[in-house]
Structures are given as structure tokens and as C-alpha cells.
Length: 84
Image (cartoon, rainbow, N blue to C red; front, side, top):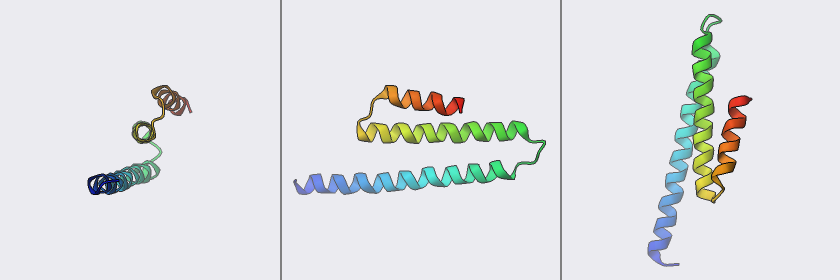
């Protein structure tokens, strides 16, 4: 492996860590807000629930791209999450 390849690998690892931290932080904030909603805020709860599901699906898709998983599996997982 060349020095340029090693730098690319390290840069990719750093970007993946930062991306994972971003997803984790955004998800935690949404879940916190979800649990803080009042009983009469059902529309807000539904919006937040859907946002968490979409965020999780985007995260799963990004990981699938990185690992070379198929698009059909990512789509199946998204549909299953939306039904669940």
C-alpha cells in the first residue's frame, strides 16, 4: 500500500467516525424530543418517529454502500422499518 493509499484510508476512517457521530447526535436529539412531547402532541410524535426512521434508513444505506451490500436489501429494510 502506498503512502497516498494509507492517507486515503485514514481520511475515510475519520470521515466515517464523524458521520457516525453526527447520525448518533441527531438521532439522540430527535428521540429526546420525542419522549418530551405532551400527550396532545401526537402529530409531533408521529413526525419525530418518522424522522428517526428515515434517519436510520439513510444511515443503513450509507453503511450498505460502504460494505457493498445490495440496494434491494436496503430498500427491504426501509420498508420493514416503516411498517414496524
